[in-house]
Length: 196
Image (cartoon, rainbow, N blue to C red; front, side):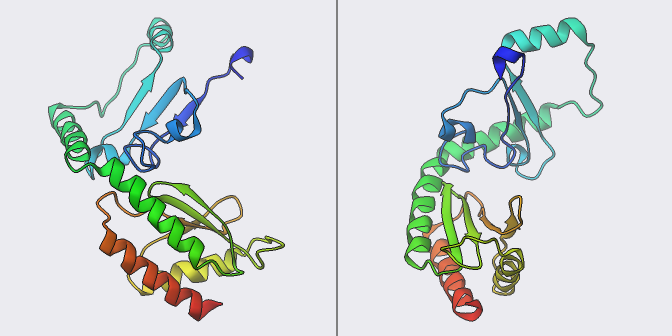
């Protein structure tokens, strides 16, 4: 890709800032991006985003383009971004995400039914393929939507995602604790009994 002049851009809006148990999602994959885009969790609700790139790319961009941004950051955004980083470190949220994610994946595997295909993820970024049958792995988008709706009725927000819409995306907040994980697992197990 790079030999042909391409660049690898890592979108860390969802996977970054400790979600995977590492600072950045690309670290889990063992790749080195040319450009990284950052967003939502960076400001903890305050609009804040960023772009990080290799020095030579930034220098080339500056040579060729005059950059202007109406919504450039201010001292407020900088202070909020620093506070987020401080909290991530102070509360050891990366290690918590890694530990709780491993716990959730283990428990989900223990309750795996014929409707659950692959269970994968890192940290608190977990996906479960919802299928018609685990052997054929035919995707079941409608079934995934039923699981999402049933969990919503029990007070847990997840979503269906993926190219076929059949992946249950479990992405709790980084302040998720063991007691929250157990509550979720109880609700998920109840949902499995109701729907399968």
